[in-house]
Image (tube, rainbow, N blue to C red; front, side, top):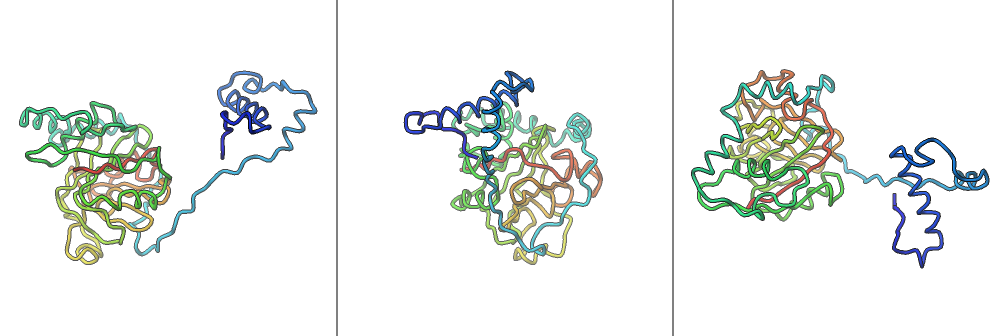
Length: 301
């Protein structure tokens, strides 16, 4: 859908009609004006001419498909959504994994504040306080790392293929930040992403929930038929293919155009919940199947 160009009124003779259609659309969606109140302000002849105009065609990007055998397991339960306030009560039992406590310890340890340019500057998902908590969860010992935005759904197409192209040149760690409804969460990948369906990474990787103030470490105790085989003996920390990007066996997975993403911790990343339970399936996004409203990928240098 191409919105009208307000700057080409001199060259475009139909700009007046486009502007009128745009104004009526806004009035109808906002519930104001003649269109928003359900009233017609045009004469019948103009109404008939407007109805005869062809509606614009919505652009739907073509997303490549991946063989079922190389995809992470599909979710079973798509219901039982848990609101954030309920999951915050669950997370309160795991204060040893608190992101805030970790950030406070590191700030006392280093006694150096990073510059604003180094801490997820320009993120549309996390604010300054959340960005600082997330920044200090990065595993660094001496020098302060810097972060650079390489992919955002606000600037790029919403699909794994575009994300793959954006992170292809990143040779080091990355931070994936996701917002789904009232939940903000994601994962830290310690190695370079390779979209070949092989397992990779090391135990420095982790998942996190800013909404629940929790860092979810890697344990790798659960295994499946591909553990240590397709990845050449490496850990199950991260893996990706042409149409998915995942952390763990099925702990967090972005798919296709981000409208059918999944999460279920306690397979490779754990805080101590029951494996396969509702809380494990709902910990990150409130449900094990969800839509990613926004996705950002940051390189960590």
